[in-house]
Length: 156
Length: 156
DNA sequence: TTTGAAATCCAATCGCT
DNA sequence: AGCGATTGGATTTCAAA
Image 1 (cartoon, chains in turn cyan, green, blue, orange):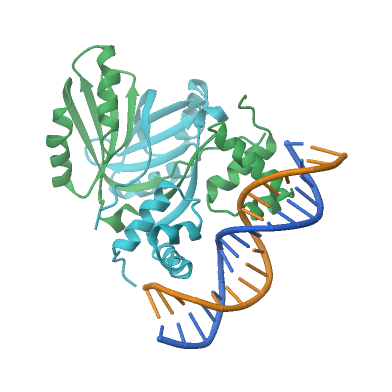
Image 2 (image 1 turned 60 degrees about the vertical axis):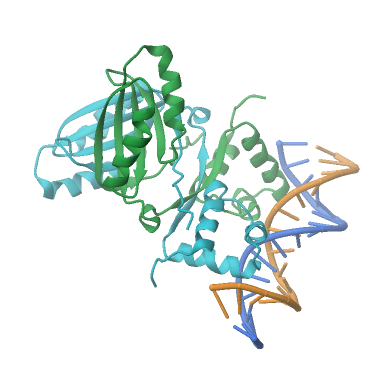
């Protein structure tokens, strides 16, 4: 099973990226295909892990998650320990993203908490318990102008 | 119309965050409520913009978007021009996130392209045309260990 | 806000192409 | 891969509490 995608697949991705709750019937109407054929394609995209999951984007402020920060984390030891450190970081639910980055710093982490105090709590209680964290540099977000994970789908 | 959320609303958010394509009937079964009552609540969450949108997470590698980078962008002029600069950045489809950050740099931007060459294209053709960009500092992601936008939903 | 009933519509399967 | 027919179930609306 390969991952080659034709134009119809890309159209499906485009439509579902914009609205994950579109009905299969509406998808079929947009593509001018039979619903059963469309359903088949969607299932294959799921199986092939082209589609990873369907998520609901929730306004963070509505559930009192007002603080967003990025933290650069430097690891004190070599490359081998990094994988372990990364896994421990990934387990923290407030941490949405863990990226291994090029350059002097080892990781870039995106974290969301209620406020500055709870970010401090998290750093003291969760981060500092992870071995091999040499230093952290925190960047606080004042305002988010754009935040979406929509990819640019190729035309063909 | 206020934005106060009760336990049932939080349960709905929790379930829909995990799977945006859950059927209303399944939601109702989980909550042990009538489907019509659940539908009413979901619609209100949408109206109140607690739910922002339903999105499909697509594997970037499957559509040849292999490069992820974060760019720190310094603005050459004062605060007033920042809003304009931010809007121009936000219009670039490859840029997924634009954050106004505290500290010396003005913006942190998350960008996804096919490869290093197309990132360079983007910086030359799109970024450098935006006025008041004084400097950029690009951080390339080598590996993404975790990437989700799921929020920690409070228990009550 | 919730419910239950009713009408319409959809999801999912399968045999055929 | 796609289609069309089928059926069991889902969505959506609405009057009533």
